[in-house]
Image (cartoon, rainbow, N blue to C red; front, side, top):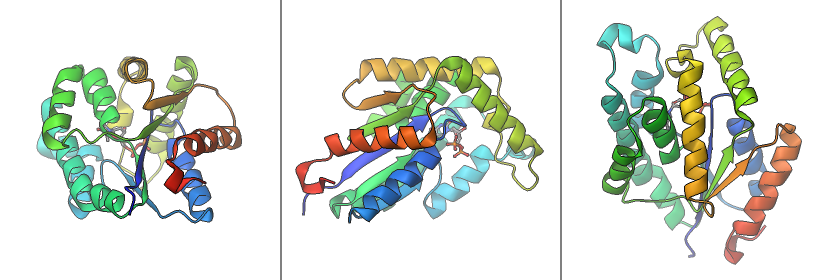
Length: 225
Ligand code: TYD
């Protein structure tokens, strides 16, 4: 059984990566591939608990301010569980794993946004995730100006929407998102083979087509579309 293929999706809030992940999963399944999808934080029972602590805007009222390093450590606790329970077994079974956010998010949001720097993130990745790297990372990163506008719009929608309280991150400022954006740029420049960035402000359909082409070109022959 050939090992599967591990693909992560990255980008700012509102970048459309969740839509693109679903579209790609459907396309790959239609080609007969076994596809496993998950999101971080979350995806496992433990991870879903961690997610509700991390993302619930009421958490800080109940728990007090969450220290940036505590936030980082919780992201990695979630990730370690997802690797053990979902990602590694799926890869061992030969599936294509599509993961909505992974360690690049920790580096961009906690390393960049919260200004912890890349070092603690990469050290934790080594220690807690056995340095498990995606085979391919699809980074949705339209120009900074439109990325900020999308993140802000989503922020407003979440605040207005009733019944959703997953907006602790989305209340952050433009500066926070600018730092995240710059860290994503840095990661893409550092790892050009793994990270493929989609910078056009194109339609969902156009980006989907570009993503499919990229994935087709990268999948090992055993998984060829
Ligand atoms: P989610 O609602 O899944 O947002 P999105 O659809 O944009 O992925 O919320 C995930 C939030 O958690 C998002 O704001 C990014 C943040 N996050 C981190 O700060 N660090 C991490 O390591 C991960 C995985 C997510």
